[in-house]
Image (cartoon, rainbow, N blue to C red):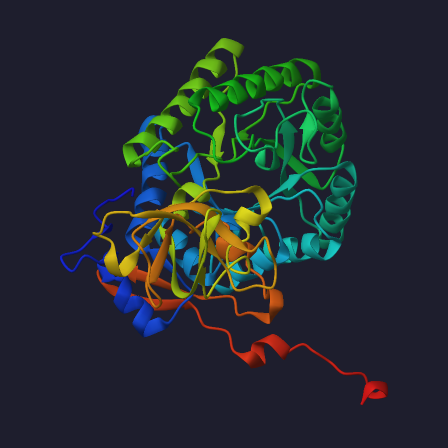
Amino acid sequence: MNTRDTLKINEKGHLEIGGADCVELAKHFGTPLYVFDEAYIRRMMRTYQDTIDEEYDRNGLVLYASKAFSCEAIYAIAKQEGIGVDVVSGGELYTAMRAGFPAEKITMHGNNKLPREIAYAMECGVGTIVIDEYSEADLLDAEAAKRGVVQNVLIRVNPGVEAHTHAYVQTATPDSKFGFSIGSGAAAAITKYVLGKKHLRLKGYHCHIGSQIFEKQSFVLAVEKDLAFMADVKKSLGFEAEVLNMGGGFGIWYTDEDEKIDAEGYRGYLRALLSAVKSGCAAHGLKLPFVNIEPGRSVVGEAGITLYTVGAIKDIPGIRKYLAVDGGMFDNPRFALYQSKYTAVLANRADEKPAEIVAIAGKCCESGDLIGTEFNLPKANLGDIVAVLSTGAYNYSMASNYNRNFIPAAVLVKDGKAEYIVKPQTYEDLVRNDVIPDRLR
């Protein structure tokens, strides 16, 4: 287990997060339950922004990547910490605006923004919009003209860096739905096109090479390729980028197969990236651009855990033992999607030594409904509380009402106090938008 000051085993032998006993959390709020450690979230946001301020003379801004976990409370925290956010849909933008987040510190990207999302973004006064296709540039220009404004934009480029991560979360390989390839000349062509738009102000470039990356060199190589491209564009088109957004993708700990990185370790990743920007600009004769980064998983991933209750145990001799819990792929589809690995503990017996390898199964009517198949746990009993660690990123974001199960509630914990940030669903919530046509009555 990747313990820390806010995630540990207490004197009762129970798992504790943010000063709150997980057994008491399960008793009070019920399970399944998403639990988020506020102190850890704030620590990571500050770590990144402080590093930019100290290493890059305050010439940059952290943008929390909303897709990792979006709710009003996370935007409230980001606002208090003085960072920006990125959004990839009208829904994420609406949530941020409801939370009172300043629109000028929001960047919107995505590979197929709908006309209504573009209109809403401009209505809100979103600071920057990232262009990912020609038709999008046309839509943005037309909408800005209609409103009599000039919209700040970036162009998403693809540097062709193949980070060592799962194929489904690599985004900068030559075959990607995201961005314009630098190597093929597509990035230079779209730059010239956007520079010709009267109601768009091109500020620079956006680049994101993937997720769950542990190699500093991947980020350094992406910076080097981006800066070489920016220098070519300056020479050929006379345009010098003011902004370079390097996206996110820093890896986190899920199991002991992963590197354990503390705040200082993440500072190291960012220092390497910023150092590459400084040396590359010096080499190419470029002005230092304003730098954005977009961490999401590394801000909330390890900050979150999910609590379940063991409801059934099935032992198939010589094959596998299953612990069935009251959650499943409706609250965590990541194992079903790409065999993501996790660490689990029995929260009510966290100090006991492991005794057997088990699979944790969900309650959905689906054979693939598993949280994982190789959990090393003490021998479990009915009613035990299972905590699956590092579930803060993409679990709630990807949750569904499959089989008309409830998406779990979420609580935020700090100094032992837990409060809802996402309320529990009810049966009424599940049928709220259902309609029976009169001909069926």
